[in-house]
Image (cartoon, rainbow, N blue to C red; front, side):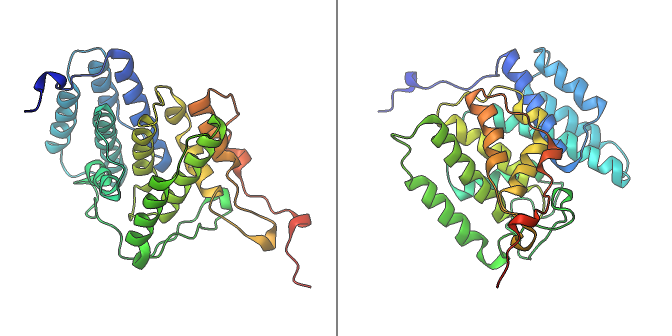
Length: 279
């Protein structure tokens, strides 16, 4: 028989942790230039102070928008920011995780259900996206035909990797490399960075990392730009994919380093001396 005394129902996080959850949840909306409403901020503060539960906070946000008339585009994106922030806080509060592609896909569905029609569905079309950090160029994302196979391969490779014996610096660098590859697949039509960030935070917890700081909250845009730079090459202009920026981000997040995380430093600048010559 199962000894039920060894199990306990998960309750609400403590006040400090609730503050971290909401700061991270709200900060992650920066990756798409979204800003939550004052109503969301006020509701989050009520939860942080223990006046309402996380579930009650989400229910309030849902009801708030359910009773409002059709929104203009800008207001619709505020609704997205509010709902996704509440969902991020909920997911991060749960001490549950499975290192599998289905878990990754379910996180996307939970974050964006009712917001994107394709929530929780792998994209079936190819995409590109102009990036200011690449001077308008785009990263090459996985083709629609290979997404599921690529996800399965990357997860299998990471699951088989042995961290034992690695220094902390080498461990963090390898985790950053896995996260970079996962993001480059861009499995969904939208919401890839926020999904990857939530998945990453939950994955890091399985290593014993206590990711209770404001690095994600304050540097979400840097995180995305660092992922872009880790996956872009233009040898003709002397631009090479580099993980140095992502390593700086994770160094601050996990090792307590104090690297400067400034977006302007990530701008891909052509260097004449590195230009490839085929002569």
